[in-house]
Amino acid sequence: MIWTDEQIEMLATLWKEGKSASEIATFIGCDISRNAIIGKAHRLGLSGRPSPIKKKKDVKAATLFVLTERMCKWPFGDPKKPDFHFCGKAVDVMMTYCPEHRAMAYTPSKKPIAVLK
Ligand SMILES: [Zn+2]
Image 1 (spheres, rainbow, N blue to C red):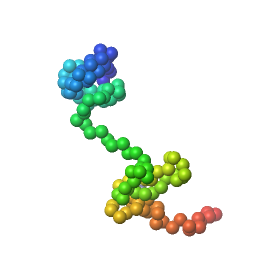
Image 2: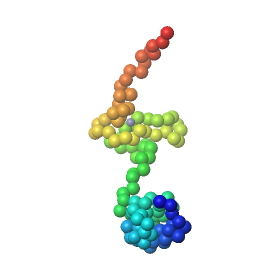
Image 3: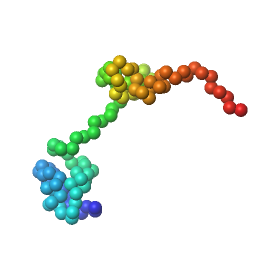
Image 4: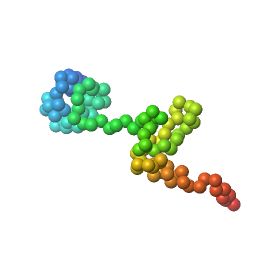
């Protein structure tokens, strides 16, 4: 789908008026799908209206402030530095780490590394 300037303008106008994506699709025509409308609207940075599509939750690095009992407490970085954070993946109750980090935590790391000859 190649958007003409008129179509983009129409999309922006109708979007701001609060028309639904399928209504906009009807206006623009060209057998355009409502998904294409939504995709284009997002690329144009149009927002500020309720969308029936749930936004994916931002997976932000967990900080000490949001760390809960149900999150992996595997640390990343230097605790003295501002970018220090925890893994934050969901864990089972009473678990300290997510499965991935649990495996790392309980793998003996002090083992001398075999030297290949
Ligand atoms: Zn983890």
